[in-house]
Length: 126
Image (cartoon, rainbow, N blue to C red; front, side):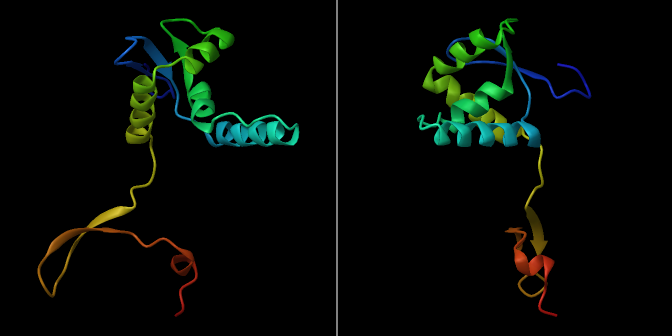
């Protein structure tokens, strides 16, 4: 929507609704987990995390920003639109690429490898 902001726009394939959304921040993720734990402690059925994530990510639908209307939209979102949005978020969300291309000097093969980022990476044996 605007350079330098965490606000983006996409049109849903089924409903043709124009969504404005943001990528979740660490605080959003923490809020989702706290709300989920709170519901569990109160004996309520924990809400679906997929739905919760979409509720936090979507900021407007066709210009509507009323939170209760947005929540209703997310709850009634067709499965195909929900899947589209989740895939879109996963594909475009910024992060660290954990793969790299490597040239093997022994066999001269050029292949993609995953970077091994485990405990040994931070505390090597040597």
